[in-house]
Image (cartoon, rainbow, N blue to C red; front, side, top):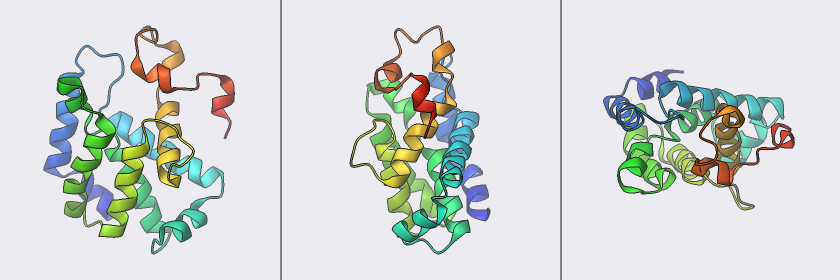
Length: 173
């Protein structure tokens, strides 16, 4: 996946990951490269396990399976790149991250249509809603599955727990 290699080696992307790490020194949840990669992989697995890859390609007007995989991975790798700004100012990280992704994605050779799909998914991933895009909904689920919130000692004060279905049924898809 050449475009994913370009993305993860991009200096802007690396800078945003480092900013997240700098802001989260004492935080329980880490929004580092490992978390981003976990979300990318889980999102792709959710799509594959439900036989939705061809649907996603057709619905999004993508050129094929490789393009769809790269779009899914890019969304997962970028979904929390604005988290540092939320720590600093309270700005919604999903909205801000969507804007940051618009700067990074062309550098990794994503086209305008793909950028729109990815940025919409990033923008939507924070809160579940009935009118989410396909990718936004999958990112939301993958992000929740990537954290072991039920075992976290900070779950009583964590803002993410307010937007999370913590029951076992949320693990079913």
